[in-house]
Image (cartoon, rainbow, N blue to C red; front, side):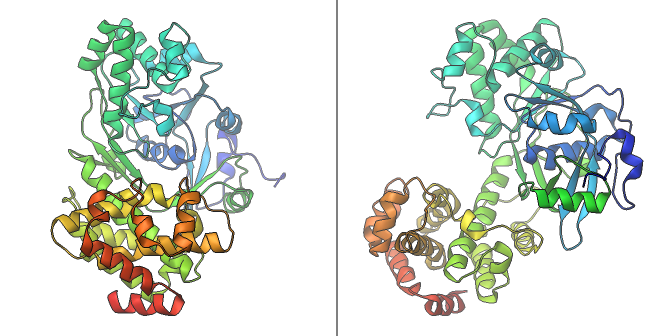
Length: 482
């Protein structure tokens, strides 16, 4: 790969035919977006949406801010911020993304970050810093005892995302930079509301006048972003170099499908991202719930039942006609009726799009990995649907199967003495290996009391557990109920 030219503005014209490249000016741009957390997920999604609209509206280039790692800047600075996005399908596509105009690091570029946050040209701040980066307390507010937050409030320089954001807003207020929108893109329910509360509580603890200005000039809409983004490997780098004719130190890959749903609450100018497929809606929560129940719940179902049937990946599991038919029926008949309507899309269409994505053979998504941390995932992915159906007096026989399959998965890992990735694994795996369904149901960290005491659900779960004793009985059960 050493003979392949390094991706940069100077080598763009050496790309292979069919490799898409920016059709807009790359030099001398003023960013309109400041983004915290320039990781793979952001570069596969938000940066790609910005790239798609820059030819028609040049205001929306991005200033990337890394709070700790310099890895992204080290990889992309020699490439003038350019990188390749590989869209995975039977026939992959390759796009060179040029939306990154500036790369800053909090440890070295503090003043430049504050200037960008205060600049009138900056109309939107986005973030992918993970839930940990919000420094939240158990009640959902700001953890004022967080070491970084406490040090900042005592007069120290910003080190946390919240601290940098409030410092930038203080500079913006002082320099009359104007209203601003701060948009969370993290995989966190009600992410905008949580971020807004943390910022306001920080400001209230440090400067009441600033807190009042933020309340009147800054909005914190919620958003939901969805697309599978596998990690970049050396094999991906070699694939990208071979396909594009250019050496990219850090290309990104994702499935072709992508969805970005944004609450339409902007104080700064709103980017024309609808032209690239963004859905601006009044209620993001309905989409969050649909994703959790109609995508993540079936994902876990495929994982546990698929592992028991000997499958390795999601695409493998979807190639099993009994399992795929069961999951489709569960989605349409058991899950979708519990959900609120979506703006601009029917729940049936959403479910079918999820099933199509699961079938993508270009995405090698391991079932064993999806099966991790079941005790943390299943209460939100499946048990919420079970609770809603039981309150409505509806049966839960199909929904009991993935839960019973999780019990069998725990038992299998325990019996085979394999590593179990789950914070409650040491407590639950021995109970699962003993076949003690009642003791598993008694784990209040997983099962709400209303379900553990629901005789009809308990009976359905016991029946499902007995039906998953071996592969033959699993298959027969899927054929019967699916």
